[in-house]
Length: 230
Image (cartoon, rainbow, N blue to C red):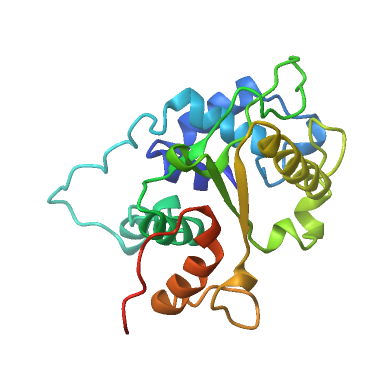
């Protein structure tokens, strides 16, 4: 995830977020002019610090009666940013799971015993889980393609763990799989291949078919929602 995308999710100014990230997670001089792909620790720390919503983006400049050139008008058009977390595939899958399990999951929940590796300051950031169903003692993780396939350009970047992002992602996924059952919680991992998808493993969002598939998958964990006829 990049700082602009995280800022959009948090509802805050990208400049404010970048300033905080630079102070909190100092980058080496060799990384200054490269695209900043945030690690899981950095994303989780920002969400915790800003409480899910940061400072509001600055308002657009007031309308004037003076003539505006084409170039100036283009500069104030709202950017076409990435989709927010609420419209992501992860949110889509968890919304279906909520419906099936008849419980609202706690999104991006953290546990004090599930932490990442220490950073340069020695602090360890809690690793979030996608969905936590407290009443069912259940955790659901939706793992997109990058959790199982290499993304060479981004995965080679070094992390606080001393390995590339791809290897760190694998280590943290494994840590979730090890630690969550140790604390008397059930873990269900859902992948795009489990649901209706195209040849590139992009979800088709076939609601009725996905509901049927997830109901079967979650039946051992408390699925109670009947399948409605299409």
